Image (cartoon, rainbow, N blue to C red; front, top):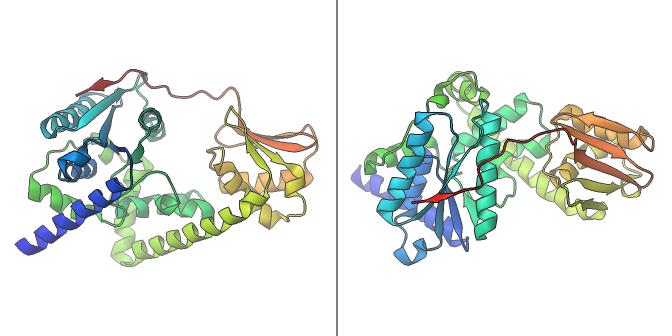
Length: 329
């Protein structure tokens, strides 16, 4: 049993060390929760000289004592281990998971750009299963079903590790963490999926999670093959984040092909198309008139000119802002 615990620890720490070696600068996204504190602890085990290439980013969502305590815990642990910690703070305390995620990622991506770093997260196998299942519920197409297996600049050393293994690792090493009370709030879909729906399905169908992961891997392979086709489409990103697509480069594709191409093109503008939006975009491409426009979910529109189709976010859509300042520990 002791030998097994040592082996598991070594595997996790080696996975983190290998992942960090792929980064010139590694920005660890540490929330203070169990998974990310395991990531922080494992990162602290790499050779001291390599730790100079690590920056820890934590974010206080401004939602109350739990959020403050989590950020403070991360700062203390970084101080104890000698790792640099940068804390971001929200200027607007959102109430929805989507708002929290947007604010957190805005902070992390801004810090990563400032430092020339790659973001490293503690996403697990369980997170991937939940993500794929939720995307099925939302009628995502093959592109979305890849989930966290899709090619990304984000580094995820624990993606093949289940949450139970990280829990054992945390207990074994006495790693401190803060339990976010929102993780038990069933008003959030992910919590209902994690706490109720998936456990119920797995009791009846134990291989369900493996089947979701197989679907995700095939979808990721499909995405990679599709990305090889996309260079033939004349699509130019604009400075404001919009995407200008040549109408002539889409001419000749049928509706089924366009329903495949549009989500991939939209991803270049950081837009995720749902099933309904994909069908509407394909129909508009084939039948829309110059000067026309369609509205898609998420405050996105497609405007058709004589030569191009412009995919962009509608001007009236606002964004959650985060504080520009940062504090170090």
